[in-house]
Amino acid sequence: MATTEPQKWSATLGASADVNALPATTPSGSGRASFSGLFPPVTQLPLDQGGIAPERGDFNALFKYLGEYLFYLMQGGMFSYSTDYDYTAGNLVVHGGSLYLCIASNGPGSVIKYPTDTAYWRRLALMSDMPAVGNGTITVQASGTPVGSFTVNQGGNSTINIPEATVSAFGVVKTDERGVYGVQGWVRFRSGIQIVYGAGADNYPITFLRAFNGAPAVSAICPTDGLRAGFVSVFARSATGVTFRVWDPVNNIWSPDGTFTYIAVGTWS
Image (cartoon, rainbow, N blue to C red):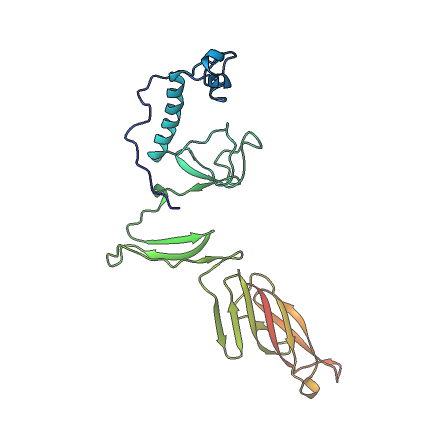
């Protein structure tokens, strides 16, 4: 069931109430509320059976404690980092005037790590961190890779749209892309996989239409047309190209005119 935002308070609940100072634990033999145990069982017993009536000042103190915290949150308050607390991934704290997101558990129960430790915390950008450019170009990045840019102060535009990029485990690309040039072709997937294919001749270096991020897996086959029928061997291979040799099984030599078709599969970024 959907809920709506409750009415905000104009002041702290119990701001002017008279309160008792709550002890950490209930003193033995008393009916006092404490911070850790709240009201003891003796306050539940009838007075004629040895019960002790709870004190109004204790009730006021409890409500005021809760009221102060709720009113602080209503005003947009965010709690500051403390070495006294254990934090888990997803917690937010303020430290040194900046907002930090916890990304790994830390605290006195494991290991104390201040928000400046990037292995445990991530600083969230504030408006004051955004660049102010009067005339120039702002580049937007995702995980350190540029995904779009715009030049300010052009034609008085007040709104600039930057296409959203899809971030993969290997890098960033907006959409699946492909291209064909003669007998050569390539396909680049947003997942980071890349395929390059085409045809070539014996001992003739092939430059991939799109470079890989490392030497890809390659395979080639020969046509079955008489003397040129044979097998293909990789002679040299890199992220940018490959050289094949074609073996002529009839004459037992590397064929000077062998041709083949090939395919290379790897990652693009």
